[in-house]
Amino acid sequence: MGRKQDLADYTGCMDGASFIRDLEWALKDAGFIDVRITPKSGSKDFIKEWVPSSKIEDYVVSANIEARKPEAR
Image 1: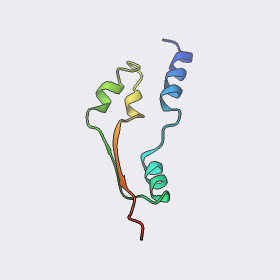
Image 2: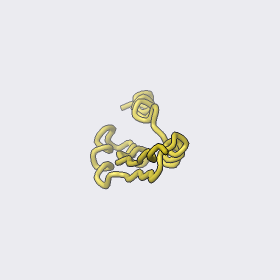
Image 3: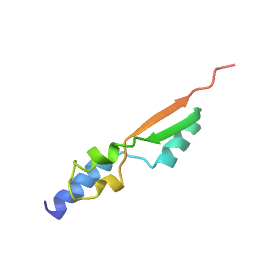
């Protein structure tokens, strides 16, 4: 796989992705409380298969995202 393909794989996978802390802030700014973002323990195993030998699993993670909207008063 050439460098051009490597760049396409990285950008295609991460286009629209967020840092976990930025996603937490965005959810809180939208009014959510009790925000929890928990990376899935096995996600590195299947992510590294997307582009073998690329170490993409060091940059991308699958996660459970939980939050709740407070009740209106």
